[in-house]
Length: 229
Image (tube, rainbow, N blue to C red; front, side, top):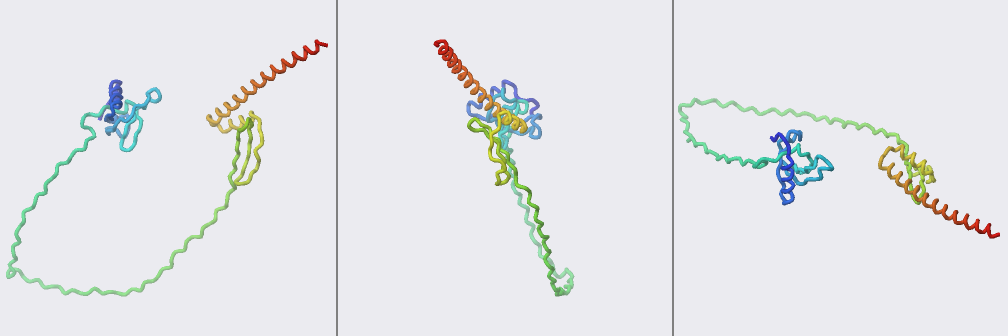
């Protein structure tokens, strides 16, 4: 069993072997756990900057990632099956059967064979066990579904229990939608809502700037008309 993992030079050698189309054999070290001493094949080297376990090893039918400390270069001949030598069957010598001399053997009286007595037994049919009656479980209330949706620049909330609509979609403010999402405590959902609100905020600011510019032009035009009196 190898005591230490792969060095930087050995990792580079495995990378070159993979580029040449070969799959180098490695043996698992003690840091690999229960599979220490077993032999596998390196099928890929991923980016070590993403994860320390960038050595992908095929072990049986699985392909699992390991760190360079978990594997070492396998010695030559590792993983090969040992062919057991065939054991030739040895024939035992045949011992000739010597006929028995009947005159010297005393006769043994043959015991009288008694016929076994068959007693007729009446089979009593046992009644089949009764199955316990099934107890009907009380039916629980129908499931409740509350949906927060965003479409066409508006946030809506709807509620439904089973097939019955408790509340049709109604519009809520963006701040209220953000507070509802904060209760879910899911980072991905919160980021998506914040991106939508940021895009709406940016678009509203652009429209406000445009309206301010148009209002300024109208005010200037109105001032010119007032001076022309």
